[in-house]
Amino acid sequence: MIDDEPGGGSQETTVFAPASMGNVAVGYDVLGGALSGPGDHVTVRRLSDPTVRIESITGRVTDLPTAPADNTAGAALMSLREESAVEGGFEVSIEKGIPLGSGLGGSAASAVGAVVAAAATLSGTWSGRELLPHALAGEAVASGDRHPDNVAPCLLGGLVLTREMDPPDVVSIPVPSRIRCVLVRPDRVLTTREARACLPEMVSLSDSVRQTAHLGAFVAGCYRDDLALIGRALRDLIVEPHRADLVPGFSDVQDAAMEAGALGCSLSGAGPTLFAWCEGAGDANAVRDAMTTAFSRHDVPTETWISDIPSQGARVVESSIAE
Image (cartoon, rainbow, N blue to C red):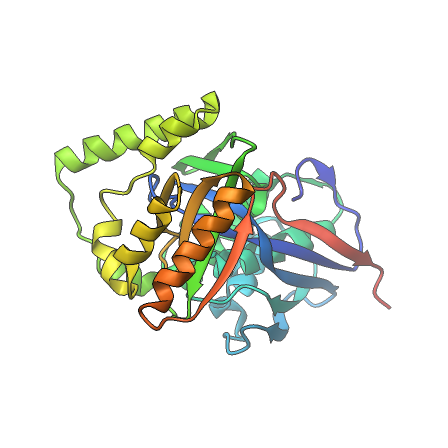
């Protein structure tokens, strides 16, 4: 993360941008958390030409758009260059470590990695909050709108609530140190656009009131280090019911997680990855095994991680003067 640290003015910088968990069940489109484990490596090189170009796309995903305006990293760099009167341009290379259509913030990571790397090649001071609008411009290319729930935690780290978008107003929420997050990704692809298409345009007042209560109690539980309250509140009454059928075996996997001791279990972002918050590594291991076993009963192969909610988001891992 670049947060009130001066840019080094290097000619080439590589940034690691972590996966993230959107919504966190209770906060649709406004709450998200950074994750340890998979992430994208994004390298940006300064150009003398006033342009943005995609040099290469490698890793777990390679069939992404190479036209900058259609690529999340390219669009983010175009926004940064145009709005900040940057002289010259940028060339970007992306090594994808996050599978797309997984609910782990893959498109957000490329956009965030690009703007953090670009800022490190520029002189002056750039805060994460200053870079946020440009990363959101990149995310909009993939999801159709400026959704902050993956972008903000990937950029800033930790658990982040976005109160307002214009201008972005983000609030960091403390996470109890004992929390471990189990992530189980079924071998399926589910795009954000597809997952959003199944949602209703309106929800009932009673459901809205109940979900607001859950969000408030969840945040209070985080601040009070009250895992029992977090467990009572970690429920999605609005989005999950409409998306559950998009994931084979969802109900069985969720039930298995709760029976194994999870505080709560729901979709990570748009899915199909499911997450479960647990108390400590012991519970997390048991919950992971229960979830993968439940998926296997539906003949669905899975990939799993156990993560904390790291306080650091995107970070520079290499910076050099290009010859």
